[in-house]
Length: 103
View (cartoon, rainbow, N blue to C red):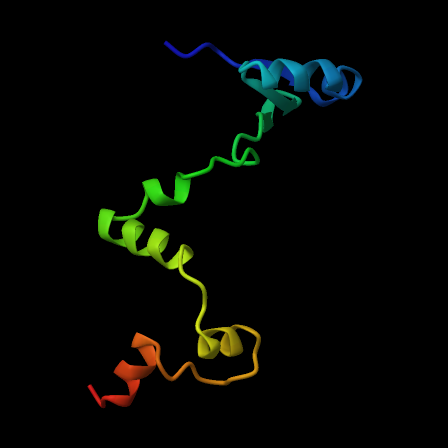
């Protein structure tokens, strides 16, 4: 069962901010209230930590395989020119070929 949050009024939170941040990092729920009204909650930022491979975990297996294969091949001259802005349209890309097919 989830623990009840620790509730501090704004004045208390101001004087104990370092301690409250530390407690939040350890997983405690810290709520800051104005009077008796909760207005904010302190919590650790977990998304700031880079998680290698996380993108691949949300892709379909086929998309993940294509992504990894694309990373392991150097860009063609046309692709490099397009990436550097020297070419307005990448003529050999599947998107450009599809757009030119009229379908």
